[in-house]
Amino acid sequence: MKLSRKNGLRASAIGALVVSGALVLSACGSDNNTETPTKDGGTKTSAAASNIACEGAKGQLLAAGSSAQKNAMDLWVKNFQAACDGVEINYQGIGSGGGITKFNQGQVAFAGSDSALKDEEVAASQKICKGGKGINLPMVGGPIAIGYKLDGVDNLVLDSSTIAKIFDNKITKWNDQAIAKLNPGAKLPDSTIQAFHRSDESGTTQNLGKYLSTAAPADWKYDPKSKSWPAKGGQAANGSSGVATAVKDAEGAIGYFELSYATANKISTVSIDTGAAAPVAASSENASKAIAAAKVKGTGSDVALSLDYATKADGAYPIVLVTYEIACDKGNKADTLPTLKAFLNYTASEEGQKVLADAGYAPLPAEIAAKVRAIVPTLS
Image 1 (tube, one colour):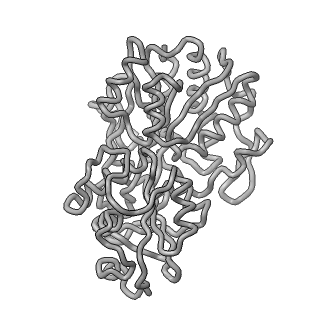
Image 2: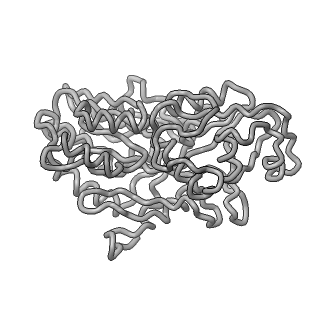
Image 3: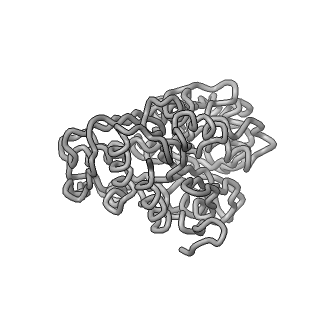
């Protein structure tokens, strides 16, 4: 990993920013504050409470946003609260759009978002961040899986055009010629496709839209910046967990969510025909190859990233997201600022990142982690 002359960081430093998706943190609600589940089904000791610096943290800290990072956030909160007596951190996984709305209304100390703030959202944040603005601090990233339930079809392949037409209600049958062409030999039924999308404003929806707008512009002509579902038809469900549950329970269903939800619910996922030598499966390793092409577009304390959704590199999974914590660089509320800084110091710290690795997530690459760790203490 090398420093970029322009952005201070090479895009290759971002490649490790990927959720492995191997497991959901099913132990997050247990009473054991020192163990986390591992990929082989066992448990592993997480960061010891004594290694977490509370640094004046006290009282309650409210946060909301991305459901993609909810499992990681649950573990971080659990460990931090175990270390810091009297501290309560309440993170609501209501979706990126809802989190940013609450942040810009001054209802939460920070928001989680699967997409960087828009210009108008930054402008709105200046009313809350007195003398400052909202900034994007990346914490973790990963693949957005296209999950489906179709008896007798275990290895479904789709391309960007076909995915766009399915979610835009232009392809409505599983044995449509376009799907059959991509899956020679598969026994595709003459049944109706049940397409599920998010009902809430979501960075996951926005990232899927960016992918479809970039990779299939002739078939997906909606605003790629929208966090709300833009197309007509289909069925809606709340949050990534809601869409995953809907797909799991309905024969002939298809939907989109972070890979960890597919793994937890044992949902089959689509391999994407990107034009590479072979279709690319949704996996942490394959998403890492796509994220490696990202570039830092933020300036100053902002570490927003630009992702390459049109990659055709062999083994690069193109539908990816990076989850940010959104906080004020200046103008944070004095009563919650010590807790905010202590908590984000922990999540970005070596100990906090090790917890992610133990739980099936990938830690931040060294250069990105160093930049975030340098910014958090400067929040005021």
